[in-house]
Length: 520
Image 1 (cartoon, rainbow, N blue to C red):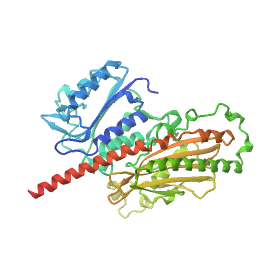
Image 2: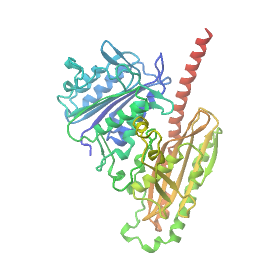
Image 3: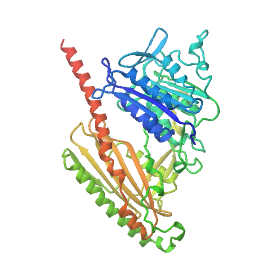
Image 4: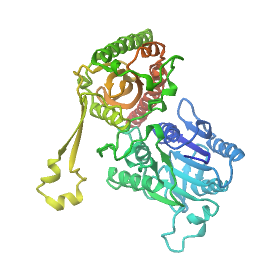
């Protein structure tokens, strides 16, 4: 769908000498990933620049300019597009909004000048910093605003520009431990991850992105942080899109309430793609599959085989993982409803909605969706006056459930709880269930984040789906299958632990500074 080549410079800075930040590096890493997953960017075309205590980049100005030079060497004028993202401190001085590198106060207007000089097809700026939206690339609502500040100057040789600034020149940009992100970035990520906002062709346009980011950021800050947004793009530009194999038609799935603080990461492997499976050379094509093999006995025989084989593979992986990690204690669950963690409802929802969207729902109504009236919507003593100012209540509540006791589903989820606060707890496992045309294996990995008292919040859910026909060759296929999803546990956990360590160290430093100041 994307014909132009898309480049990006993504910057996140935590380790400021004064008032260090906690989540800007996490912001930048997450933005990079969603640009790859949803927006048609290739990893080699994204220049990620992050600075934190253990890996500090003090000469960020030079690194930014070096990235811009590298992009210019391969950039095709009027054909390729570029995105600039920044998370960190900013200020507003002498009628200019600046972002703060370690070695400079860099005017946002200068970044516009340098990026637009490439004559990009579309140029996008997402800046999550304080005071970022002051007199930069606006339509000129202020009378007598100099031409250098007007958006038209920068898009004369482009199809357009999209701009998202965290707030105006007199406001602060927020970041919170609950979100692990800056507020603007969190809403930007949520919008791109929310498939219900994509149109029937699987496209998400800049206007939709800006509308929802502006609305959610404003509401979730009680209007203390109101983004400055601008969009001047010709035609329908697919800023983000759902790949054909992942596309869910809005006509096939009932609307579902979304939690703006929650998103499920679907890795590229999560799409049902038979090309990725190590098919034996003599495997039969679907046209030769015999109906007789789809009886209950054959289905349950294959299901039992997969359950036993995957259980052994998972146990072997975790046994190796635990050899030098005595801080972890393992618990096993065969019923997802027994997981006593915050966010288990969202985990269930992600499985049910994903299965229905891909037309791989299980038999016997194992996955169900129930729609019931929301009594708070219909009965309220303050009537219209209350509704005008209170958060909007949905007319109906949609609940998702999984019947884990059914014969046609097997579940094996391992939860590893760490007694070391620097090591993140997590869960991993699989679900095997019978679908209409065969059998589905779904693998799961998720983080258990700290709620202030224990590791209790399910986050960063990754799921992958593997379809199998009910036939003899499937047994060999499954035996040869490599569970790459579980082999990435070590790498994923390293990233999570690094994020936890940085957050804790930042808090410890701040507490030490505070304690020292009180002693004076």
